[in-house]
Image 1 (spheres, rainbow, N blue to C red):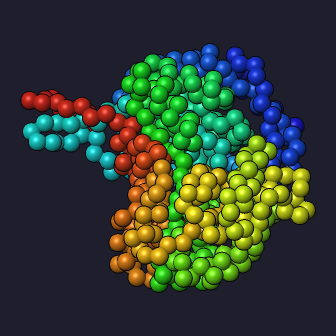
Image 2 (image 1 turned 90 degrees about the vertical axis):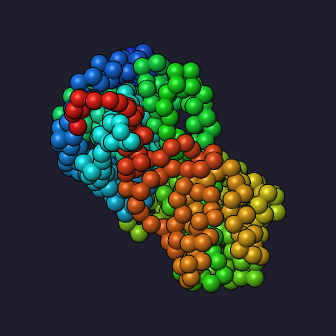
Length: 478
């Protein structure tokens, strides 16, 4: 049994003031693996005070100093990449292959941000005035469980690059990942108070971060519902907010696409991270006259996905994170059937031989209409809905008929046409012919998928405030 009894405040591992214990459960087996002691509002206030005390000195550091710390953070996190990958597998059932890759990229993220910072102009001339980009202040970082370390690394790295100090509230479901990262931050030798980590519940630690006047900005990744709650709490103290929220991404297959390639890719785009990804392409839009072909290919591709113990290198789809989330996905599958969608494969219940863990059958529905619940609400599991359209205009209309706008996908052998359709889709990112990776380009959503952008220079700007100096201003340090 693993017991995590410390939080990280002001450069020290301390026992929390809070006394609540949360269970850690392996979703592959459903067995208890340990407990984590959660911080409370008092712990959060102490962490905020430490971050505020550290901010004046840290905000005046140079690019070279911050770059050196980002390099040390990369080195420390890279040295623990294998430990982090095992934690990903243990805590939410991330398949081993993708968990290893994600953990290594978590370390690389510090170098990506370092390069962005080095290339970023913190002092500009606009008109006849000097514009100085200054750190926004103390940042409250709130992250979800689906690859917690990856989210924390990006947000913390960007805050450090800007000269901000932080208080992190990670998901309590990710206590092992959180502990590894905290140890890495300590190993890197950051000044005390620059990074503080408080394990705790959202309605306790998250609520204090959202309302406390000592927090100047919040960077949150999670559900749209929680994002709205955070934004409401933040407005009284006029906090800056970056919200990366939910999605119901459309994957539009145009009639000239290579369906033999596009359909397996669509299954991958939907089932990534065990279906637990805000960017998952969960709505597959196909030409009505190609539906029977699509159904045949989608059924075959879904049934070819290997489900099982994520520690097995050959497994592509592991379990859902908790029993509660498993029941949520099961409810949506039942709703899909009740509302008249055609179940191609998968369905309610667990795959044979995997009854102990929180495994969901890879599920594909066809003949889904835009008004059905499974076409409108974020399920967060391996469930694909296939919808049909008659014309390109109708495809675009269906794709945009959602309260979300995080990501979208387009497949076509005609790149001019694909780009034309991509330009009409209301989404923060649109992928053409596959799933691509660029974590220097901005990431975030339209509509209820969020506010603001992360990654690269756009993400760095969100941690900075412009100050204008007019007249014969003295030289301002870089």
